[in-house]
Amino acid sequence: MKQAEWQRSQQARVESLLSGVPFFNEVSRDDADQRALLLAGTRILEAAPGEVVIQAGAEARGLYFLLRGELWVLGEGTPPPVVYRVSPGEVFGALSLLLATPRSATLKVAEKVAEGDRAKPAVLARLSFADFDEPRVALFSLGTRLALFHMLVHQIRWAVEVQRLAAPDAELEAALRKIPVYHGEKETAQELAALREQARALAALLCRWNDHPRAGPAMT
Image (cartoon, rainbow, N blue to C red; front, side):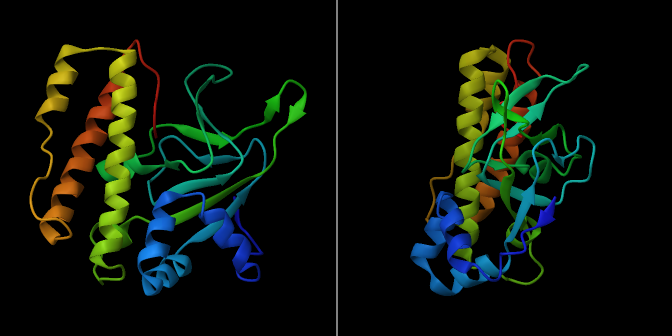
């Protein structure tokens, strides 16, 4: 993977690509200063077909969004099977960041989109998760951090629901019901703390469901 050489010179292209991600759209719409900070802190990366973008067992650092192309999540085997496909607009790499664990799966750029056709390169956006989770310096506002964690909670809960339907499990469903939902004052530090806790609880539960014998990975 390499940083896109055109990131600085083609700002309109960058913004057009990021417009496919609801989180970036929300920040851009609500706060011009935060939008500028977010753009400055986003790295646009390119990866060739077949190139590995995340290696299982590696240290988790960045939070990624797929902007163009398709990624394959690989399972175990020889050759490793494709167990999940990441589409443009999706976030990936969140679970290991939330749980402070090594990457749980290998992701690579799709090698083909149809029989005999070679896939196009992938374009990705990478953010430093630490800037949103527990930053030493308040780089991003409370509103921006809330937007990120609202997105993570929503997407992880959706993935949990997918697994719940694919592989019903009474013990896991009971654990899901025990995860608290915040009902306090909105747009507060208390809400952010609750969302961070909820995201981590959901991530841990999703990892358990991903290991269920009747379910495959629904998010990474």
